[in-house]
Image (cartoon, rainbow, N blue to C red; front, side, top):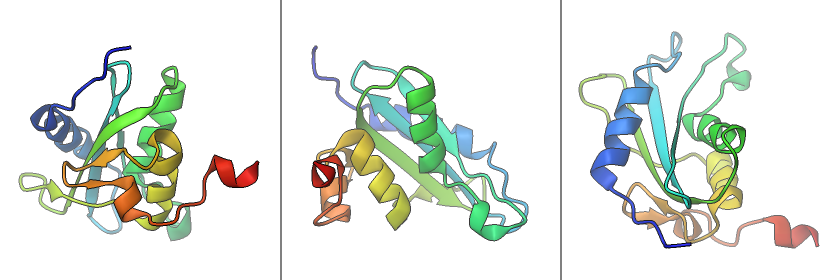
Length: 132
């Protein structure tokens, strides 16, 4: 398979578009994520809050679900945007839980928001190899 290269402008546009669909009635904080899959597909996710705050879902979690629901594969690059002003969403970084999810879906070399790899954001990760 030919290696796919991320078009960061496209990924950030998709992340901003999906962030508009976030369900964020409690914090007003919208998060969108768009990920490039190794077969060229782009999958997306937005945050979904819940009245029981601990049950909310992060955008990156929704993105990993969309990855598997649409046929699986490995993530190559993920753009994340965050903010309260939908007209000024800025690049963001995944939380610790989502770094772990992204590590399993793309490995240490997965690019995040064009500036970091998951390996840089999650040093000494726990992954599938630790269970063998």
